[in-house]
Length: 256
Ligand code: FPP
Image (cartoon, rainbow, N blue to C red; front, side):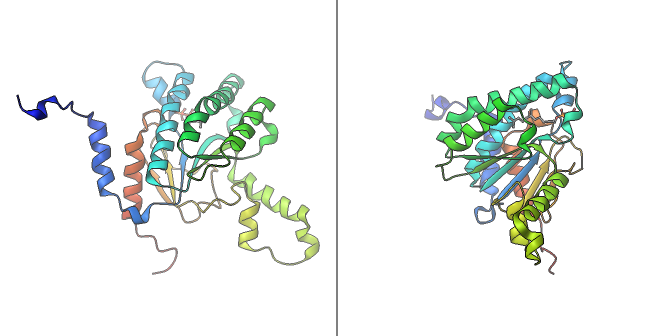
């Protein structure tokens, strides 16, 4: 028996991941990727399950996308978890989602810490329940000393609302009485995303091709990639595939 027959073959997805990794240009990794996680409901429906099961299964995809982003050396990963429009869903589903965010965040803290991940939340937090705000604050504090990937969870986030709140913040801060023009840098700092770099790569799963009021300002020059995979099926290899496609695009920022 040859020595090689003792080697247990790696699962196919692992081989695919390794193959994709070797195709990466390590010098041109996007700084900031943002994901519109879509398709949980359809994933559940295809299996004859209730929508909630789709949301639950989505947690593995969240974990995989965070791990892959850290492995790739991204500076920031933003996940669109709950939009300002998602309050229109049945109140039971809204309550379920908020509980799920809370539980996931609390359960993942150790792993996030082990992977040197920092944490922040973008969106209007006033409407969120106190228990969720407490968990968000605790995560931010516990991971504050880390130096790696910034995981930014967009909760009760809307792109239009973000721009409006930034304008109002600047007005309240005396911009009107100062009677001078606001600079782009000042404005960007007033957005919920604060000091995060601009979005280089925006991914939406499930085949839908819309931005749905996500980062309107931040994604001004983002490469948009729409994947046919439903979010609960999203794995590390999908992020790699998107990054490779991003690297094959010609980014000119309006120049020639
Ligand atoms: C889209 O699926 C997903 C959402 C509305 C957001 C919920 C996201 C999760 C539960 C995963 C992220 C969790 C954390 C902790 C970051 P959909 O319900 O719109 O699907 P459908 O369009 O197929 O109905």
